[in-house]
Length: 354
Image 1 (cartoon, rainbow, N blue to C red):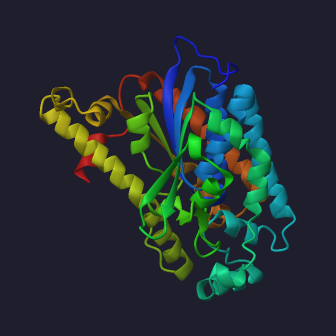
Image 2 (image 1 turned 45 degrees about the vertical axis):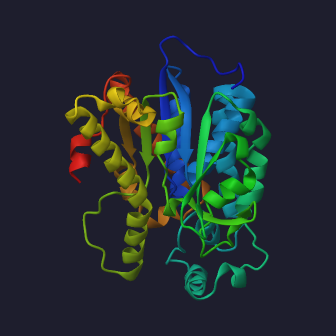
Image 3 (image 1 turned 180 degrees about the vertical axis):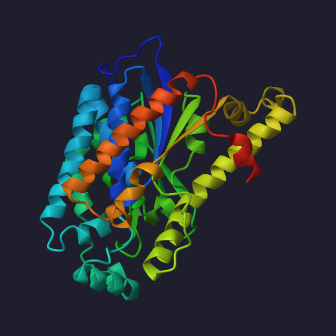
């Protein structure tokens, strides 16, 4: 990282894991905006998927070219461009919301038509030119050459390899516009993104996001998961759109919940066996033993906005999500900053119990 990023003796090193979740990625923008304000924090690594990947590379580009202030400005400009693109869309944000999210809002007649069509026709049929408004927005927002050269912030961008179903993690050196678009490639909306002759879909199917690259390769011992897909719902869904939405939430949370449980079980084993990580001299076990895991859950802040907000890319909604994320991060820091460097704030015993 260039010299514009200042390190202080008291800085707490922090890794971030950023979920995808459509336009709710603007909530994560608010979180990042608040974290960048706090010079007591030094970001070491970011794992991101879909909207989380976009936030990660936009912020990394700003940090690499101009430091914290430039990163905050880059994030604001990117999301403003998303809002502007939605304003120009004839479906009043619905189509653009689909390109950022997972379905078409049911309250739009044209959106409903598109939603039904996408369940019958593939994107190779209804979008033969493979148009994707995110391509031009990301190309304008991110200096990928600067991101590839960046050595002070490790990036791990996940995409799903279509033929094998396995997660591929793109690191700084091999990051590109196509890699980020692959991470956000919903297969019912876009043709698979081809990289080196292989096809990729949204990383949320295999890691949303993946935590282990951060544990294995970053220097920070504190890892904060910014979770924007709801873990819990108060009621069992009964309407078809609600059922589909809940299925998608469960699917896109599944991989990260399994990783958290694996981490919790490993830590429990290390604790029960009397610190085998040192005795066995296994680097990954040593890293897991040192790890302190934290979660910033967006559910409480976005619950009142309604499900359609995940698909709404208008500037009013994006700004509201940003403010909610900023406030949530501020509250999280007030509650948990003192615990950084000391202990996890997730109940790992509960996670290990399943």
